[in-house]
Length: 131
Image (cartoon, rainbow, N blue to C red; front, side, top):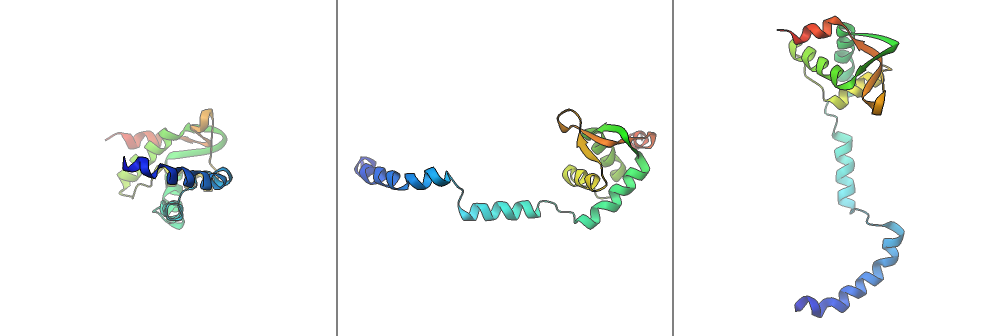
């Protein structure tokens, strides 16, 4: 009953805010936008200068590069995780791993971006899986 009493005021508020809604849509509040921006800026917990050497070494140890080569992203990342764990290195997130490869000129492509273009795993990567 109390809500029914407030109905004229609620309807008036909706009518007054309609032009703003039509112009801007349902924009998130400023504090939500700021928190999202801070999260996006800080989501990579490994500094860029710390990413390259480990991934460079993985590529040198376990991969070959040439324009005609390709490998599935998940296979490359799994091989990297095994390589890093075997060497006692900190395992980067898949996002940081792909960013580091991108900085080396290895691009995502293939069917729905599931492959890395210009790289393939070598026998050394397969040996990382065995005990």
